[in-house]
Length: 327
Image 1 (cartoon, rainbow, N blue to C red):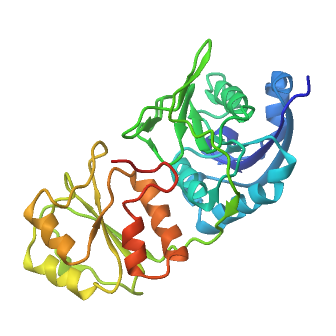
Image 2: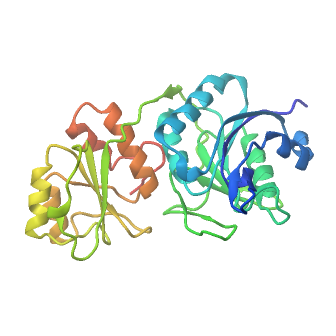
Image 3: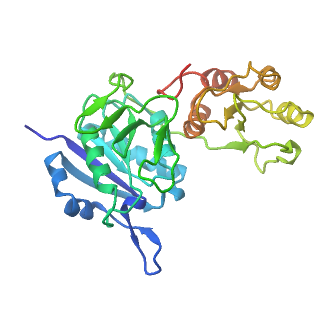
């Protein structure tokens, strides 16, 4: 039986790091090390490696994500699945970005990484790589996922919530798509539908984000460049004090979309629940439902690039596009 052909795209991150002369971790090229440390991977799939860059994931920029997406687009017809090794700090951001950039990729795209480098004895990289390649060989998966700690997460629902533990990620507001134990059990929410492939390559990153706190002074919020959208990371269900400074701030920037997100990870924004939300809604602000912060950032960038006007943008923010939101 012919083995699936998998393209492994390496971007850096802890998985590929080694200690430099000063003892700090720095990214290194990893393809040959994976083949030597995990020769059994060849029993699962035919692997081809590409190292597109080798950086700490905290250094990921929009240009890196676009490079990654271009590589996936150009190689889509030549492989059965794709595995991206990536640092954990921004993995959920990249997974979210790719989810909005691709529609009906029709093949699995799997991101994985590690909390300890592959070169270390107690590394979690080995099992993460084996699991990621196993999932990438599944022809029934048609979405971008993160595979970590023997768990499959939808790319637009994952958040890193632990710094040092091996179970670094959590799935917000839906269950993980699968657990990899003795058997692999996928839940009914995994996207298996095929469709017409589309690639949306543009991301407008001219957005401003403000995390609210008690006593925030809106009159202190100024821009060197006027943003194309503003995200307010509010309390609870999207609540914030309807003070004079806030109202003035909202009215001053009414020409751009203002999105209300919640600092609370479980639950959804509801601008109809409290007076402040109702006031903001009347002024044109829109709630973001139960989307993760990471997914909202790239949904905003995507919609700014592909919607015709503010009305269309506001209409699509609370709508489900790629499994990122539900009601």
